[in-house]
Image 1 (cartoon, one colour):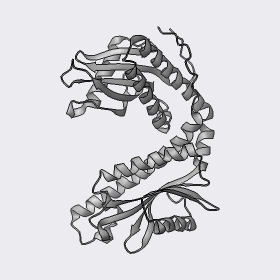
Image 2 (tube, helix red, strand yellow):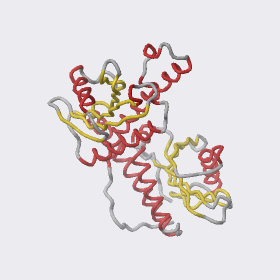
Image 3 (spheres, one colour):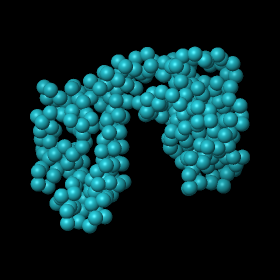
Image 4 (cartoon, one colour):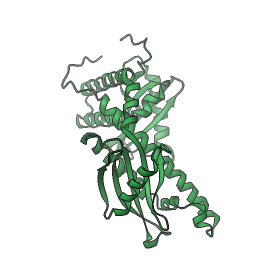
Length: 338
């Protein structure tokens, strides 16, 4: 067994791979191997109870779950594969990164990148039909990657945060107000744009004509934006014209821009599945004659938009940091399994 005590940066504790099938929770492999089977089953039972919820079905997804008994926090990726031996005809699998419950900033500042690695390894395991040797090799490789990633993060974290915050100024959502014209409705961090910079962004919404991405650079700022429209019961023409923008000092390189494009698309999809989200663009005085229930809904949707924009901004920092932290693949390195 490896000796892994010592430094605070050693926050990665285990990678655990579990199955939930006709025999209930089945441990497949845990690395390092110092956790006993009973503990692993207890962890798996909690995963099942949380991720199945009231629906009693488990599908593809990601969740963060605390395990105070072990002083761990787990980041879990779940997925299913066809299995005729269970009533649902699908067996659920859980691939979990276990970390010390201290240092939560590491998890939440890198959650997209960590999730991507869990998902990629899950696909490899499924493609290899979960053969025992391959499972052990891939699990150990993933564990070692996370260890190296976390070490690099703590070595350069202050510089990374400083550089990413200098690179991106804010995330914002603009919409076309029926009287005032284009306005910045929510921006995070707040009060980061000057009046002149705000006017430049509003002008972009004013001249936007069709849905899609575009970017532009000015002497003081650059932006990467996505123009789209959402159905609205309250707007003229029954639609709200919306601009989602990342604002920078200078445009990032293509790799980061592509990642932010994807973030934007997911943001728009999230808005589209909330049919009442358009109400978040309306202030109380604009709907003064409306029923109190509608005013309450408008307030609720506004809070949701603010929460989403903040999350989008933090996710953009994650993109910058994860790109800088990427650990190069060493190819088919030899892995000794226990």
